Length: 297
Length: 297
Image (tube, rainbow over all chains, first blue to last red; front, side):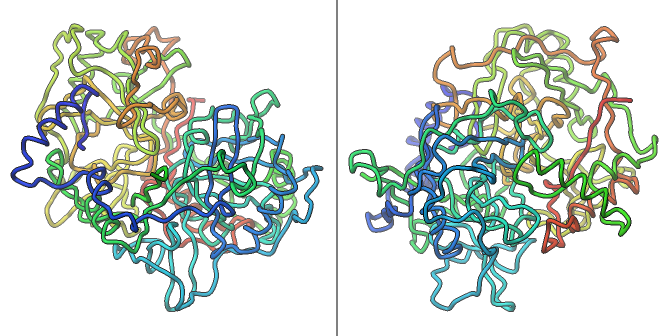
């Protein structure tokens, strides 16, 4: 679907697309997804889903244990200890991050810890699933996707890491690399701050409710911190999906990146052949590749 | 300034930075700017500043006549005809754009036009001021800055264009490349959609009040269009700064990109030497380079 001026025109375009169908125009993103076989989708595992209730609704984050096993385990324990319940979103910096939690919390951590050794990157394993993007990246020798997350790798150095794309969630830290762990988390809400890659531990990706974090009022203090308690947004609860009653669990599916559907999707974004585009880019950035998530049918 | 956990810690860090000064640590962005000579700043010309009043406050956009002379002239005429007054923000799509205006408006256009030939890119002129970034870009042979705006160029083809970075403003269009002109405008509020480069005419950049456009509720319709009139945000007025009483004109200055200060600033972001960073990126994306604007002293 092109760049159109109004919702009315969008409907018009859909109609004209249907008419032009005989000349087999390029499929839209929705059409490519609709044609995907059932097994192109994977169910998101409930014990890896962090469900955060805000006054505005639900945010769901898929955790990435393959990249940050200790941080993910710690976040799971902090959730189980109800550490985050009643804490707040304390920082929203435009074109950068939204941040929540509390480093100095007096909340019970249960089995959870306040600090952990860094998991900024890790050794590249031959057994790692990896869907290479193939397009050049100016920050890393190679990029692609693992477990539904955008990743970068340096095959020569034998290292791999998650990349700071829009919607990626990380563990805030202080000056020491080992001072993060999960008590404070942030999500990228602007142009990818790739300079943070390998400098802070990423733990997952928002798969539902991103607008609940990106459309918040920006903080008026330095670095976007809210300056008064009244501005902070209270976190009502954070649960693992597996802790919720079955009927309340998010039932989500993510498109597998190793599928032909995903390859088709990426190519449709790399070279936009929709009639609106006059010049396909011939390139796609790892942070512009779509990583579709849907409600399980 | 590093990535810190709390506002309290930010203050602490500032203090410790001062203490460590004897070992000449890297200057912060604010320190680099504070040391800039007076002539490193240029005054933004009032006749190129579009001042949009929203219920939430003021948005200021600097227009880019060098890249889109006809579109900029047309937008200026539409402003003078009060075309935008009373129109609305109609679309906010997460990680993409906020869009306002009305293609089918019955508002008087005065000398302004509803459609114009495309100005997607233009011939590269030897006389163009240009501050090359120097860093590789995966979408274009070269990137840099002209008139305070992020640009890309293809020296072999002899073409130059503005790039779709966060905060850049463009003229929405329909299917025909010549169907834009300014009645509908959009601003990038997410990861740079560089696939739009050379496919739509960019007309300027937000230099104040970006959060008034980026922190809006996302639209619930297809492509982020608001589905009810109640959701739309009314544009109270749009004026050229030069039309406003002197006391109401924004008095803004932008850092000149051809200065040593700007080079220092970019390098401080390309290779973060702040003590928080353990691994400088060694690279900066054209859309991550800071383009500082300040209130005139």
